[in-house]
Image 1 (tube, rainbow, N blue to C red):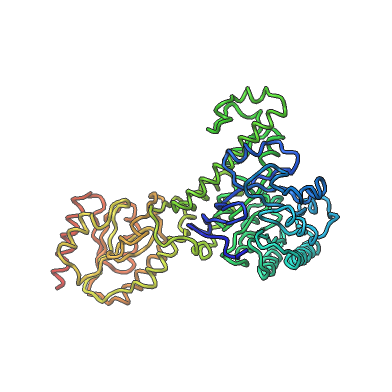
Image 2 (image 1 turned 45 degrees about the vertical axis):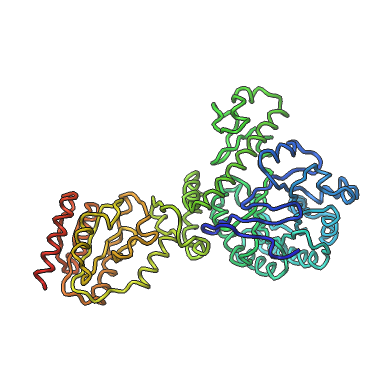
Length: 530
């Protein structure tokens, strides 16, 4: 199989809408693969397909032990009754649970080829949640050895092979595992051992694990996150570059009478209403579901859980296409304090996140909190203004503020000045977000396409003072005028004017008439200095 079987259609942050081509068709990413038992399926696979899932994950090791050569004759698609894309785990979960399995990586490689897996996983040695460094090092070593054994053994060229990455709680080992595994010709990679990290709410560590893996594998390969298909963390993990997920949570939660929501799970006994619009929740009341026999209640809850998971994946795809993935991550992060802490860590990786963030977007960007000031779009714009926009040696420097939300060049103040052809003078707009912007650049994305509340007007005075001083020194202006037309920035501009001995014209409380009057006074001041 060609190693270019993954196409990226759209990106935002490190999230990608793409297509992964397999022997049974193309899988659009990001994608979640429901985990199904090869024989004891409690949810009909036709139901899973009808909900919208084009791919599932099943266990090749259990298939080997329970079905054996019959699966090799009939194929895994016939065995489980699914004509879509099938990814097979080779027994790594059993290794994690029981310590070892009685089969070699080479044997599982041959068997997965025989049963016709579309996407096949190396029989690895999961690190799990172990805090034992020696054990973690051994798991990385054995996983790499198994990966090499698989590459040496496989013969079919149409199956996509997954290179597993281990290391668990030891970030340096995750990075080492990813770096060494990426030297082998795998079609995609998978980060192991996140389940216990998530279950214990160590979301900050999850960020570190993903970053360590993502920065040490080829960008043109998909990254699968084992066992991490949960709506609470999927926006964050997609934004960090995870393309595929698998999860059995839908059925495990159902067996425990747990109802999946966009922000977690709730026990049935805690619910008074079913708030989801899926077919299950619109056809049944909460009391009707509670009254059902256990098996039927599990089936309905699991079906609802699948609908919820599929909806979450679709929303993430749309967020990437709309350029709204940051907003999705930030909104979900408010679901749990520890997830918000992980989001704060996430915002520290702006340079990494910038790689997939489009230079131009169809929509404005929204800022709400100080964390949003670390968005790649904001950081990129600030860097470009600082790098590319140098003061021109002109007569008068005019630093002004305008109420946020107004289209700058359409304001009475700017119209009046521009009509009077002030090309011999420099106008700098004081933005709470982007600091000092030459007026001729303000229509460039995202400078005039950024919306934010007044609570973000608190631009650090030291930063503003330093930037203004640099511009003044480089520009060599005859005179400098500061014009205040935004009451929220009055104190900020007044402080700046006092520190740099700048003439201040205060019209911030006089509305549109004040803008015209301010423009008139600026023009008079310029004429007097001529």
